[in-house]
Length: 180
Picture 1 (tube, one colour):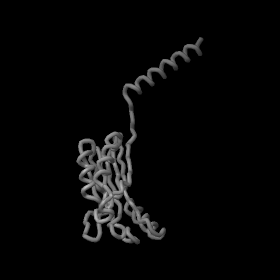
Picture 2 (cartoon, helix red, strand yellow):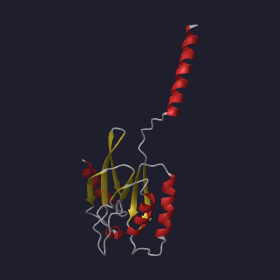
Picture 3 (cartoon, one colour):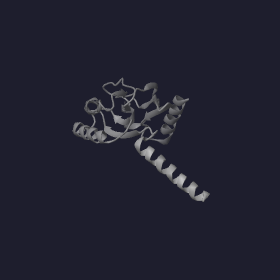
Picture 4 (tube, one colour):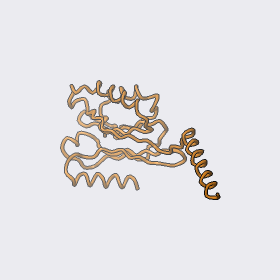
């Protein structure tokens, strides 16, 4: 008899708990999307339909339920404007692109972050080694910090060199130093 009562009480408790979770979800997940959007500088592949692609990417991002977007290869100012204009109500906070001091010959890092919550830029680095076409950008890393459900988090967006492993290892070492 006691086992029957315990089994009924456990079933009732599990039912009540499941009902409460459906009514009051406790999702502690911070949803971060990272995406290489391939918006190279204007002087590279000028006829690559970046504006059309930016509109389509923004349309897809509006369908998703993310908290923070970390983009790589967001070099094109025009593309960033198109994306931000369409996403600014959902993601009003923007950071980067890192190493913005572009010149005629070199461009920014392409690392750009959009968020639905305020973040603090903790660190920004410029890699001191590169090879090939990657030397046309001030590649590096952008680290931000925020709070989610009472927990502090940090995110570092980066896009490393596509060349020799020795350069990549050096860039990873710089990122580790930034995080210390």
